[in-house]
Image 1 (tube, rainbow, N blue to C red):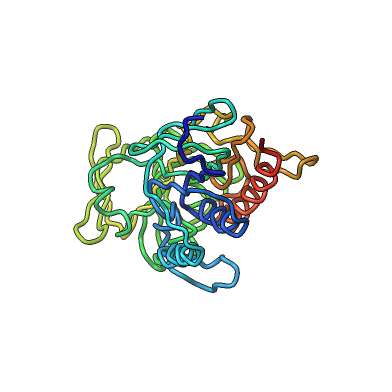
Image 2: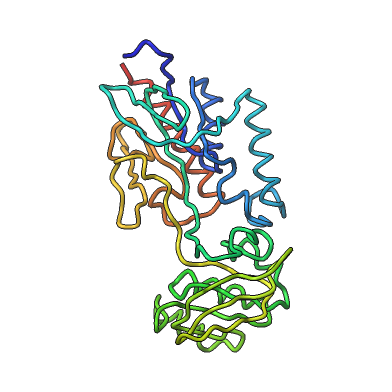
Amino acid sequence: MSGKNIYDLIIIGAGPAGMTAAIYAARQKINFLILGRTIGGQVSWSTEVENYPGILKIQGSELVKNFQEHLKGYGVGIKQEEVVSVDKQGKVFVVKTKKNVYETKSVIIASGKSPRKLNVPGENELQGKGVSYCATCDAPLYKDKVIAVIGGANSGLEAALFLSKYAIKIYLLEVLPKLGGDVYLQEKVLKNKKIQVMTGVKIKEIKGENFVTGLKYEKEEKETELKIDGVFVEVGMITKADFTDVKKNKWGEIMIFKNLKTFEHNLTSVDGIFAAGDATNIAFKQIIVAAGEGAKAALAVFNYLNQWE
């Protein structure tokens, strides 16, 4: 023990899972801290949310504000600090950020995922202005528009099929010589008259000033520009959990399980570290699922702390 203030719990991540865990921790009167590099996670860049129970339609940013207001009602604030390491010293965890060092009896990792980027000119500048990383979030905005989907694995194929319900034309671009993903998805894409598949292409630039107007790509050493109204980047997600050594699957997602004897859920391979939301190996990456997992993790921590000595 260092003699510092030792928290009962530190929650890492301020998306739906982390903020819900914080609400439940506050209700259980746990002495805790919530740390987040950014507030809201993927929800903050979702244009519209239409599948959150009790709310027919809401902007992603507004839903994040609602979460924050709920936390404020319990007197809870979020410290915007990026965690760089979590180490166990005896029974206490030392959580280091780029600014501070904290000690805690338990940890909930709810650090989520971030989209893998193309890293081409125009991508960052036009994010939210025609560049999207969430087809299910933003598809309705592209009704009768011409769009491009980047990525020919399952996520790209599924995005293109979903977007075909709205857009009049979809270019599906893949860097590899042929599409990947499940065969049945490939067949559905190839049969869809709205979708034009283009393989063996390298994205060079996303063009536009106030909004996306075009996409430049290279194929067989020849550059071509497409006139489009939007770009959906579907080249995978990165789990934000490199600061911990808990057991992960081949995709870098934190493995969680449950102990029925102690009624503890969302356990990781390290006793005292729990995890929730998109950073874990749960099957469905949805806002409501992440929120539910955050609640489960906080309740599990409450049981854990009751046994802590």
